[in-house]
Amino acid sequence: MYVRTTYATGDPAKMEQALQRITTESPKLLADQPGYRGFRLSADRELGKLTMGSWWETEEAERSSNEQLGERRRELLEGLAATVTTDVWEVVAVARAHVPAGSGLRIGRLEFDPAKVDHAIRTFNQTLPKFQEIPGNIGSAVFVDRARGRAMVGTLWADRVALVGSRGPQAAIRGEGVRAGGFRLVSLEEFEVVFADNR
Image 1 (spheres, helix red, strand yellow):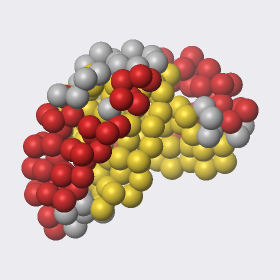
Image 2 (cartoon, rainbow, N blue to C red):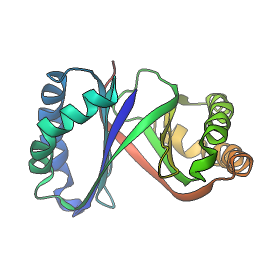
Image 3 (tube, helix red, strand yellow):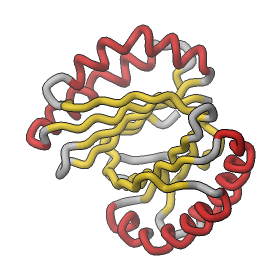
């Protein structure tokens, strides 16, 4: 399984219009593509950030869809995005659940030695189940870029209250995982799930 993520920042005052366009148009555009397996859109309205991820059955399906939809994606973000970054990741660990709008999303971005990718993946698979023991957790996933030694860990929470309440417990587990895997934590962010196509 592969995921294409898009991370955009811009004027918070323009966020709602962009979210509405993406929510209205993206599901239909994506659903028509072979190998499509789901979509999620999340936002930090206060700071003017959004992140969206589309799930694909194979690397080929992701690449083909990107060729078909890349220009339309740029158009949907027009007016909001001062910066846009798109990445493709391999899904190496996942505990998926139905994700409703209004859920909380926490994303940690990490770096590791690409030569030790197998050790990194083992560490992620050992750590992920511990997140599920925290009250309010409704899912989690780990994406990696093997060649560049990067990873993105996403945890999903039932609502804003659960997201806030999980900060301390997850911090302890995250610290253990970072030490065990020899990772470098690059950033930690939180978002609200605006739309999810759960497949």
